[in-house]
Image 1 (cartoon, rainbow, N blue to C red):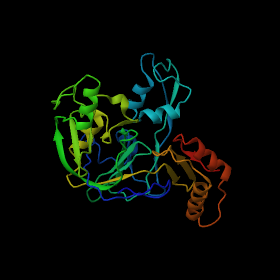
Image 2: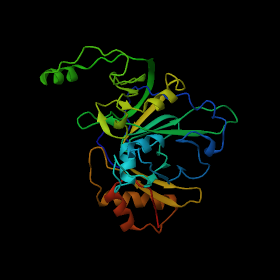
Image 3: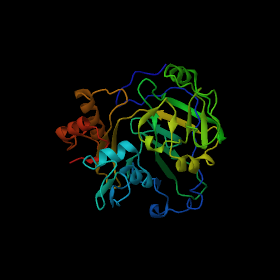
Image 4: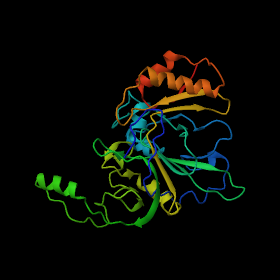
Length: 319
């Protein structure tokens, strides 16, 4: 049974799951300089809990905001919230587009895979050889929509499937039949397969991490509970995540971070259960800041309240 959700409580449940992460890092894993790593790959910070940076790019005449997001390791909601006044489909040649490429690492053990459903993002902490710089990889994901929430808890990966066949569950076949468009009992590998080319089974029956033939849905709550990745992202991790890798699925819509200079930041997302953030939550967040700083801090209650109200995923420096 899944615990009742609280915005600042880590919700853990014993589930068994499989998560995979891929192979295109192999030529770059030895690089300690983050500028030499693939997008979304960072050395773990020696101080603080933040990686990456926010930057801007210039839109071309042909590209959509979704094209830009995919090229820069960002999902639908992330790019939309970072550019609220920019058209998704026709941003316009020469338009400056903000890339929200900075991340506060989840307040969880840095091992295996951590999936934050509120953030629509997966974090992978690969094992490293002695002398190798510890790192984190992060990828945008799609998760379960309303009534099909992705289950929370700690599980592990159980099996990897290349070119998987898809067996539509009974609920999908029933709905399709009611629409007068019966679904097949099995969809073979290929362009019409919604699992894409790679899938990693979790030890939660019926749930997996997989690719997709509809990449525009990455960064949305659009699946029936499975965790979707861009085809190139699932391929990148597929071969490198051992069977038995821990997968920790959490729902943490509020994150507090500190950079290497000990400057504080706060970030809030819309909770998957759409819980409103009240005074108790505000006091909890300020309490976390003060605890980190060893006593009463200069945190602005009004500023933190505004961040929680907006819940737009933007990382805001604490003044």
